[in-house]
Length: 102
Image (cartoon, rainbow, N blue to C red; front, top):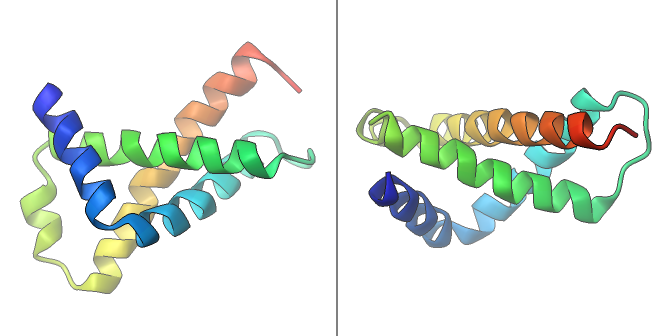
């Protein structure tokens, strides 16, 4: 499990700019999905997105999907990175909303 976490972190560091852009978009989308119609905080979107992106990449490495995803074209790899970040961000945003409803 530690190996998957370190691989996920190193992947996010290698693709820093793309990871940040995907994380912000995923954090915004997931937060808006969980808390529909509420005004949010940009810093919260960024934090939820970054942590959610890590959770998503961790799941990809833990499940052994990296080799399969590396064979895809850049567009589809970005799509699956966004999808993983969105799922991780959604889970995190749902937990935050469950603990502290707005």
